[in-house]
Image (tube, rainbow, N blue to C red; front, side):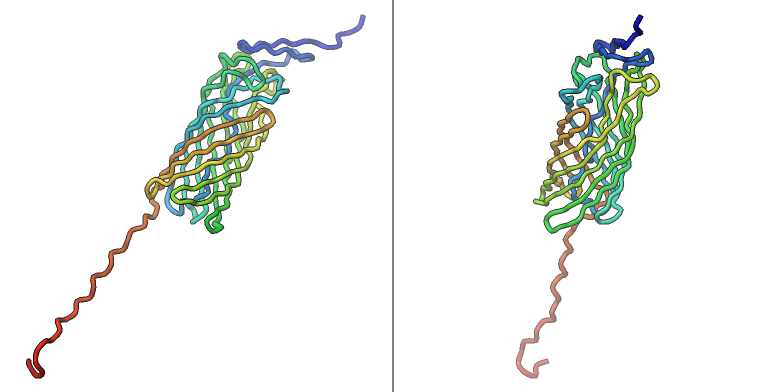
Length: 279
């Protein structure tokens, strides 16, 4: 009799059921929550000197491409981050960036209810470099971050962390309209996704690159503070990712301009008044 020409594999991941043709017994089911791709947050205005500490909060969303299948990726909808930058020169800054993301969306990128998916948090850490160059009122610069991302996945009902490479880079154009700096970014960032069914020998998230765009502004608060807002959008292999972010940064050791007190007028000796020859 004729041999078997194929097989059907049904994998249940929580309430999400995936049916694939031709899958073998060595396949495993998985699902997880990942951080949406984003560009480095940089307004293009250098701190000049000192050390700047910053905090960032954001809201993100994810929409899978229409043909997205074999997917169990939930995008973390809430984010926060910390950063520290040191002014190496008047225009060049080196720093460290840390992020966390949690609260997965209700649906996977590929569709289907994400109820019960690991909530995270996804965490990331990176070393960073950024620089901008003056073009009169305008500035043109770049920002990049290199590090790792750790996402919480559920692989064959076992929850574990999965680590992947993190890359972020962007070109930044800005214009100074004191006390406001308006900026726009274009760049790329790594994009993580979790296939619903994978070979048991190669579980975990898959990483690709996504294009990123952003526009925003920052407001100077006093001599050392900056309050920033950015609207962003990412588009990659697995989906699209709109976002909104707020940031606040404070520079320690920044030069604060002070007025130099003017010198007192010279004291003139009293003029001699009297008849000629008087002592």
